[in-house]
Length: 143
Length: 397
Image (cartoon, rainbow over all chains, first blue to last red; front, top):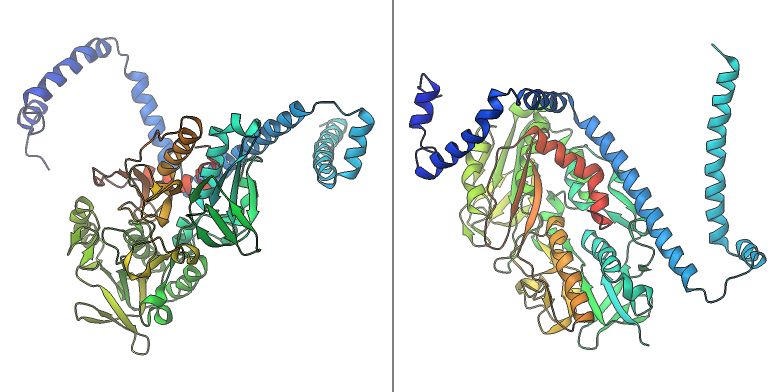
């Protein structure tokens, strides 16, 4: 604990501030801050700092874990989709002659990976459709 | 047109991010069919190893710490699930368990290290550690029931001069976590915690940490929590029958739980390569501290735990080594010369108990500067553990 009784005394005797470099820097900083103080431009900044501090106080490990989990889900999807898109685009660009629609359908039928990918897309559509159907039922039921 | 083969060995954090970074850096050549990037791993899973220490306190589960390796790799990475049995650096060839040989133009060795408690008599039988999942679970089973007695904590350094043990900060982190865990269980008053450090710790002697600034603040950190601490305890052997740890300095200490950072060594294939000059059959590969090339082999790069450098054997090191290696391989391919140098930078967030954390960084020139541990630091670490890590592994962060 300090034995100083005023800010002036504290600043005057503080060992870290008692050198020409620190005083020069402080002087320059005060010069820039003074008009902002006069115009009350710091009010929102102080409120923002207070709000950020409140959020940190309220946050706990469970909240951080949920946010981190969401982050991973997001970046995993971005990584997977952008990687697949880049790779697939290059493969398509390298094809000298484009396959006919019938050849593409034939490939779809013979390539197990492709059919599984198609199944993923179909399953996703089914989930989206189920959600829309439930929404529709709620709307039809009214209040 | 011959395809240049770039092979990464190891599916840990170093190997995974480097394979992805190579694809991103060399994409024009890959698209043109001039370069192929492969990753060889003997495990279809990628494990987040630094979080095994949380397992020892029941704070995380196995499936939260692993992901299928292929989901972390770009589609252009040719993943080979096989076991490298031999490195023939002179012939630029790998011998695999499946019987196949693989020639490479450029090789990245990221094979990690192996905790080897069996190298200290009695340690495997009576000691515990948290550097692998199953041993960490075994430690948890002891810590969750201990009611009274002594948890004795020790650290074993490699015999290779100026090479650290795995994750330098981990013994300190787990000591503080242990203190908090036992307080939560309500048994801390009956359980004595004794943190010890060996006489020789890289370039330091008779200290509590491998870098002076942190070593100097540790006594006050421990004393504030009632943790006893002692320098000059280099574990020589353990008597499992009497539950006594015996030091090279001639001291014998009884324990109820011995939480010992064990000896480590390189993987068998690296040990058997005959290239290592490390004593005690530890197997660290002689690595150029700037270019990260294997000494004497310009087309081989080494990273992570396998190097013989005075940098932390930790993921935060790989994160800074990976871009150097990737840029150097690109430089050799495109310009015929090296273009990047590693400055020894390592960064991490130390878990100082469960509720506070301390961001830290250092490099070849500067030691870690200890900062106040904060709640925000702990939240950053938790966020990293639970989400950001998987972006790092994918080379996205």
